[in-house]
Length: 64
Image (tube, rainbow, N blue to C red; front, side, top):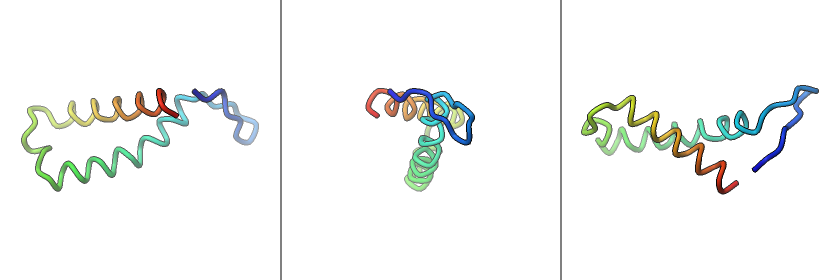
């Protein structure tokens, strides 16, 4: 896990860095899921996308 990161004298928490890394990964995964048609088959697409984003952030925190 990362420690605090200083950018231009401002200390940022590691969660912010992980969230910034997860956004492009999420957008790519979301477009893949939309093209495959899986997002049309889930009960609540917004809740499903939120769960995927949380999974991505937790994977980054555990393995980076």
